Each structure stands twice: as structure tokens, then as C-alpha cells.
Image 1 (cartoon, one colour):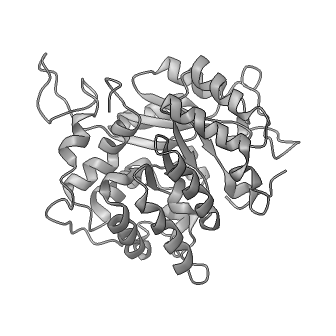
Image 2 (cartoon, rainbow, N blue to C red):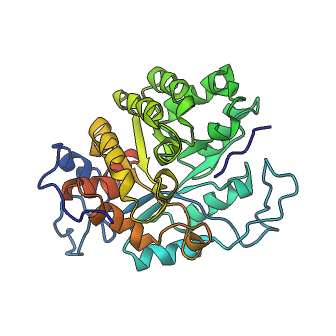
Length: 338
């Protein structure tokens, strides 16, 4: 049983991108009425625009009978504390011109990923889903195969941060088999992980270069707690792996001030940007619609403005990569090729 853990910027912008990557990234982005590959009109003259992809979105059902709430770490869990349905998400997306979301199975539904899979079935042109499997389950590899072959699940999320001091499974034979199967199937993994655990993840990423792995929430480094430099160095060390990306997300947790627009965190975000490059950074938020306020998160409009306008060193090309082109490449959105 894991130990649970607690879950005014300059408007200037660099004149040009650090990397000559945008063309390649956008070349694999979505096409059609929702997105753009080149910035030109489509063959039928439908206006096209760059993809905007939230790569970290939790949703949960409002029908506990059809989609039970079975929290694996809270035996007497009574259900979600506030609504957070896919309908709320789609409304929020439409109101903010966001084209796509990557659903990340919420722990409220435990290891049963049926709801997020059904959400993708309902909105296949808008959503991608990552599920959860019990990392300590001896049949974890079989669970991975089941969910990703029998359901529209594109990858999995693992949360070692909940197992600090009891994360032996990260280096187990069973977890190695999970990665071997993921590599054969071109799956994507995201890890909610503490900085102390990153060296274990690094070894997996090095052994399995065919698995694209994403570090959630900047490794949840708290810049307001003690000396963050050792933690920062552990995250920056992950930049050398071509298959590792980072979500520039939850600055509300990372920032020492905890106050939007989290400008005190920008110097550190700049170091992550310099180490990884804009082509390995991803946009993510967390919750749909009114649920954002319940969890004390910025609105989607403010989250988008953070990337577009507030963080001063992101160029226009960087913004397009971080907000969507990188995600379109990683999840092979659109034509299925990357």
C-alpha cells in the first residue's frame, strides 16, 4: 500500500525560436477544421489553425453505477468531491478554442479505465486517453495489453510519487515487461514522479528508447521548500534522453508564491527550457471547467495565457510547439504517422 503525498510575468517575448523544429513538428500535426499542418487552408477551403492540446486532463463520471468510484488507496472513498465530466471538458475546450485533450485516468475510478475509454469513443476527434494499471499487480503487463489492445487507450500513467520508500516495482521484472510491451506497441507513458525517483526512470528510458515517456508537472519540484537545486539537477539530467519530454504544468504547485502568473518560477522554467528545448515541452492543466476552481487551479484561459503571453522567453514558434505541435507528434494525432 503506497504512502499518499499531498497532491506578474513580463509580457515580452523572444524574437525567434531557438530550434528549427517547428516545421517538422507541425508537419505531423492534425489537419482539418480543428487544426493546421502548414498554416494554409485545406483542400476544401476550410480554415485551419494550429492544434492546441491539453496533455493532462482528468475527468470522471457522474454515474457511479455505470462507472464505480473505487479509489485503490482510500477504502471508504465515497466518490468525487465535485463534478468533472467529459461534457464539462468539451464545453471548456470549445469556449477557449482548444482542439484536443489527453485524458489521464483519475485515481477516483481506480484501475478501471472504462470511463476515459468511453469518452474517447464518444469524441474520437478531440480526445486521447491514458489509463492506470496497478504497478504492483503481478499481471500488470497483461493489464497493459488488455487496455491498449481492446480499448482506445494510447498509454498509461504511473505514479511512483505515491510510493516513495516503497517503489521497488519501478525496477522489478514485471515493470520491465510492461516497458517491453509498450515499446513493441509504440505506447506513451507519463510518470507522476518525485525528483528522487528520476534516476530509476532514466534507466528505463535509456533501455527502451522506443517508449516516449513524459515527466508530469516538472517532477513536482517545490521551489518554496528548502534548496531546490539538487532536485532541479536531477530533472535537467533527464534532458539527454531523446524519448523524454516534460509537462510545463502545475506551476500552481511548483511556484513558491503559488500566485498566478507564478513569475517566481520563470527562471527555473527557463533552465528546463534551455536543457530540454521547446520541442520536448508540453502544455497541461488538470481539471475541466468549474472543477478548476474547486482544486484552486487557474482557468483554462489563464493557463493558455501563461504559455502565450506571460512566460517571457517563449517565442511564437515555441508557443505553437508547446501548446500543440509537440503533442500532435508524440500521440501521432491525425494521420497516425510521426
